[in-house]
Image 1 (cartoon, rainbow, N blue to C red):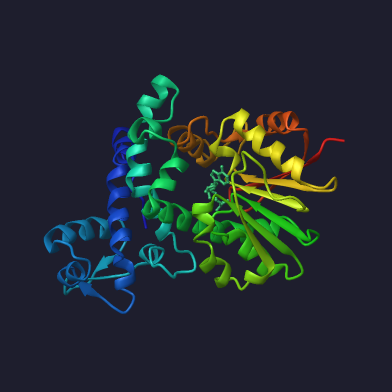
Image 2: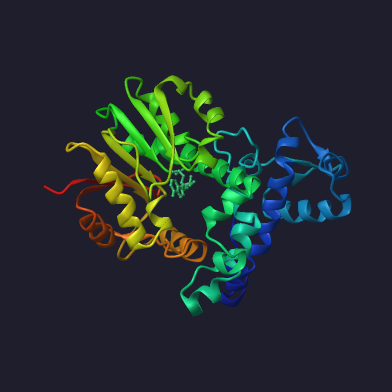
Length: 340
Ligand code: SAH
């Protein structure tokens, strides 16, 4: 395919209109369009009737999506899957349907509309829009919480394999997944390391729904579940404390308090593994920097950190940064031990 060279102002406009396309993909994901096309092509009338939608309006969205290679229309005006559309099927091996839904929901989509507010005030646009922090909101909105945790499950599906390639978890007898959500990561790890045990720790309203994920990985017997807040304490006795996408949700003081609680709970030989993106000086990839802005608008004090910033908060929690292991995904493993 020859990619046309657009004049710069058109290229910029394409970037600006990214949110139009983003919402179209969200609509298709939310309505489960890709799942309905798995058994063969369907017309917009059939798709609309299956998804309780307006046929003409759905047709316009499908036509727009097909124009960028997501779905394609047959000569008889039926729609079929394309490789991109397959990623929206719920059971595809690289399904991102849950994430697409999460990003398109008001909690994230509308919050990004408040970036200007955040830049002018330094404050979280989410709090301005919803009047509380993200996790307080999820506690009160079970449907939104379910979408968020399912999306985090998907991110683990995509990233944990890459982390296992890059880092050897086999020496850990007991792994504690701190703020582990529904337990997708601990599920994948325990399935691979059959001699290890796990402790899944999160807020009660999250742990209450983790059983299906633990069952899916056949690890119910080897994984204890503990309800609580990591600002109070975390379960003792782990050889490794896993903090995947936890520290970046909080400001330095809160992050240090979580790390101190892990330090207090772990034995002298224990390790803390922060699993997050690291902002590199002269970063050529923009993902960590964009993700940093996402943390900024969504969580008060939330941010992605540089190596120096990780080092500083670890030191203040009585820990020592041992090494940063990168993976083929953008997530890194920041390994730390108790300062000797
Ligand atoms: N580690 C998981 C989930 C990351 S999202 C993953 O990577 O898939 C952040 C998680 O922190 C959520 O599951 C949320 O419920 C949990 N969390 C937020 N505040 C918490 C608290 N005070 N104590 C324990 N867990 C908390």
